[in-house]
Structure formats: C-alpha cells, structure tokens
Length: 274
Ligand SMILES: C[S@@+](CC[C@H](N)C(=O)[O-])C[C@H]1O[C@@H](n2cnc3c(N)ncnc32)[C@H](O)[C@@H]1O
Image 1 (cartoon, rainbow, N blue to C red):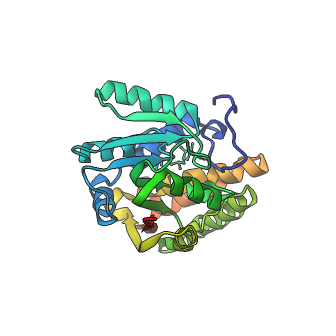
Image 2 (cartoon, rainbow, N blue to C red; image 1 turned 60 degrees about the vertical axis):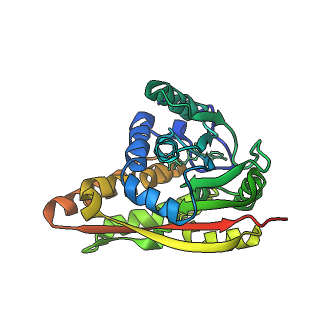
Image 3 (cartoon, rainbow, N blue to C red; image 1 turned 90 degrees about the vertical axis):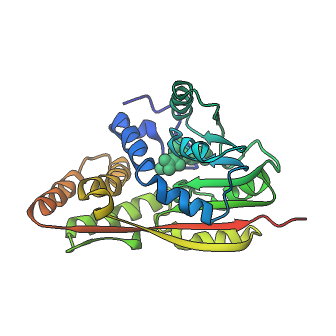
C-alpha cells in the first residue's frame, strides 16, 4: 500500500487508501476496458464527434482517454485527474503507445480551462464528490459554448443479483451508507439530470446502459461491483468485516447460476451559446 499522501476531503475515491492499491488499479483498468464498443456508441449518441477537442475529466489511468483517442481523427483528447500517481501511470502508458494524449494533474472542482473543449466526458467521478455543484461550475467553464458534457455514474438501486443473494444486498446498502457518511452518493445516477439542468445545460439526454453478467462473466461482474464497496466500508470502520459478506457472495455464486445486472446512468447536455 502506498502512502496516503493525496487524500482529498472533497472526494471518496483515493487510490492510495485502498488496502490493495495495485489490485484496485488493475480493477480500474479492467473496468474501463470492458465494453469499449458499447461505450463509444453511447458517447457518439450523446454527440462526441471525431474532430472534437475532448476532455476526460477524472481520467484515472487513462484507459478511456486512449479509447477516445483511437476514435478521434482530427480531434484530440486531454485527460486530467486529481491523483498524481494515476496521471504518471497514464503518461507512461501514453509514452509506451507512442500516443500524443496529454495528461495533467488537476482538480475537477477547479479546472484550469476556460471555453476550451467541445466535449467533456466524466466517468464515475460524481458519486465521489461532496460538492457536485462546484464540479458542475468548473466543467461548465471548461466547455466551449455549444459544447457537450456527458456524465456517467452509478445508482445502486439499479444493481441486483438474481436469485437474490442477501450478502450482496447487505454490502450494497452498507456501502451506500458509508459512502454517504464520507461525502459521496451511490445513488447519484438519478440526480444527474437535475444537476445538468440546474447548471444551465439544454438538450438534455438521459440514458441507462445495462451491463449484465452474461456480457462480462459473473466473476468480473462481482469483482467490479463489490471491490470499491468493500473498501469504503472497511475505511470507515477500520475493520475488515465486509470480508465475510464477500465470502458468502462467492459461495452463492459457486453453488448456483446467478445473473447480475447494473444500469449505468449516462446523462448529457449542451452548454448554451451566449
Ligand atoms: C472510480 S475512478 C474512475 C476513473 C476513470 N474515470 C474510469 O472510469 O476508469 C474515480 C477517479 O476520480 C478521481 N478523482 C477523485 N476526485 C477528483 C477530483 N476532485 N478531481 C479530479 N479527479 C478526481 C480519482 O483519482 C479517480 O481516478
């Protein structure tokens, strides 16, 4: 585990505070690369075009920034993240790929950009923010007039296993309560449309992308939907007690055919022209 040097009180996601930060980094990369075709399709549906200047806000290790870069022709993509270690990781991946994708450390609440981007993608950041309206203002400033903001995030009411596994539901609820205590919101998905409207966006599009265990395999599904939950509970209580829930979930999955599904909320809007 790395030193806890970059913990921001404004966010519930700090890679350095994971009990296994290397494991979390691999999970983040795996999750980001799961369904690139589906993700590109919805970004295009929300208005991303190949000649645009795109910002990947809270880009993590940059996997999605590279996917966007591969799609762009005359356009370009910039990735920013609060965590300097993730930015270093993204920069070294860019160097290996021979790609000219720019990555900078920056706080999404205070972005150093003014009227600069045609399209901003913000993936799985808002659930972690204590001040989502502040981030909305900063993203609004970074967009050109007529530019599009697209936010993707979770709403844990749209997450289930069938047949029901009580330990999974218990972990889901515990994580929701603990993330709220730390300033986050695991039910942010339903609030995104209001956030965009309140910030002055027009042409709002609401989308829910269903991701299920037949698409990605039940083991991957469980990994991506439980790992952060375990951490957020462990971090608050200082114990490793969610482990018994994970054990029960694993046993249930080994014993029978279980289907899992999550609805990922994606909402976009256009910054008005003056
Ligand atoms: C769940 S990860 C998602 C990363 C990436 N968007 C993806 O989908 O793979 C959340 C990311 O938000 C970043 N983050 C948290 N608070 C932030 C802030 N205030 N400004 C910029 N990035 C932030 C974290 O460092 C982390 O990389």
